[in-house]
Every structure is written in C-alpha cells, then in structure tokens.
Image 1 (cartoon, rainbow, N blue to C red):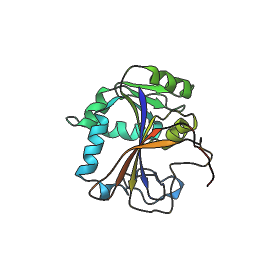
Image 2: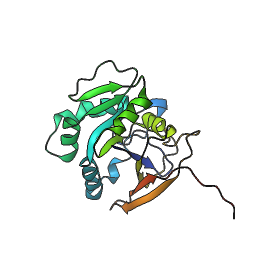
Image 3: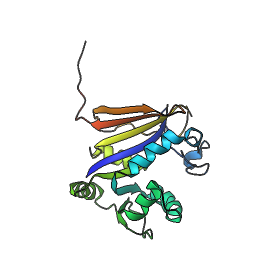
Image 4: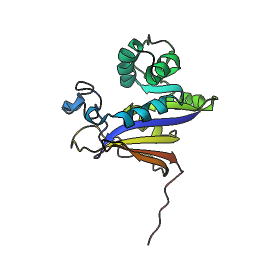
Length: 199
C-alpha cells in the first residue's frame, strides 16, 4: 500500500485545531475551528474521493480519539463508511484499549510496523491530521504522497506542520486545485532527496 497523508494547514503552516472550537487548545491555543468557514462543495468532493481510495487508516492517538467519538454514530457517506468498515491502526504507546471495531494499537515498534503495513497489498494506507505521527513518518521517509490543503488564513500561533530538524525530502507536484473558497489542494509525491545547485 502507498502511505498517503492529508494535512490541513494555514498559510503560515499551522495545523493545530482546524475543525472544532475545542479541538486542541494545548499550549494556550485559542484559534481552533479555522477550517470550517472554508468548507464547501469542492472541499467535500476532495474529501469523499480521498476516503474512497482508502484500504486502511493509520492515525495518531488524538486524531483517533476525535474520530472514534464522532464517526461510529454515522453511516451512508464515503467518510463514515470507510472509517467504520476498514482497518484502523493507532500509533500510540499510551493508549491501552480501542473499542472502535477494526482498530489495532501499534507503537512500540512504530516504524517497523508501518513498513510492514506498507508491504501489504492494497491501494492507500491513509493518515489524516495526526501531526506528531506525521512528523515521525516524514523523519523516516515513509510518506509516499502528501495532500497539503492550504487555507487562506494566517494565525500567527499554533503547532506548525513541518517541524525544524525534519528529514530533507524532495517532492513532485502531481496535482493542484483551488476550491470556491480559495483553499489550495496540492498533491505531492515523494521524489527522493533535494538537489543543491548554484546559479
């Protein structure tokens, strides 16, 4: 399976608390819910199409807990149907149980477990949000495709998506579109290491 990561960010790279006013207030962050004003039919089509390509999900603990509290209550749309029926792997060393059907906790040997999952047949092993997990995956070169969903807003504070000290990686732009509310959806495929030249 290809490991694909979808991440919502602001123009200044903030990924914290996009979807709900109380989603992630850690560090004193007070600007949660910044994504919602930009959600429209174009955005929904992108989300639905993405979940339609999934064969499994890999989630960080916090994202898993948010999803598990919400999506089992729903059915009949591409997102809930995929999340409720497909395997879910939670990267955590602190979570002791996971009641959502089809969930398995991994984490003690996370990198090796993810490599093994990628060797399985299938289309996409999808990561959504899960900022700390995403940074670990980037650090070990495990992300094959990045869907970077950039919102036209600057917050000036909050957790950034690309942390300092990450693994230098080159990507190739495979597709870009713009929603009716000005959200830029860019798909990047890993292309090895950066090249360094002079003029």
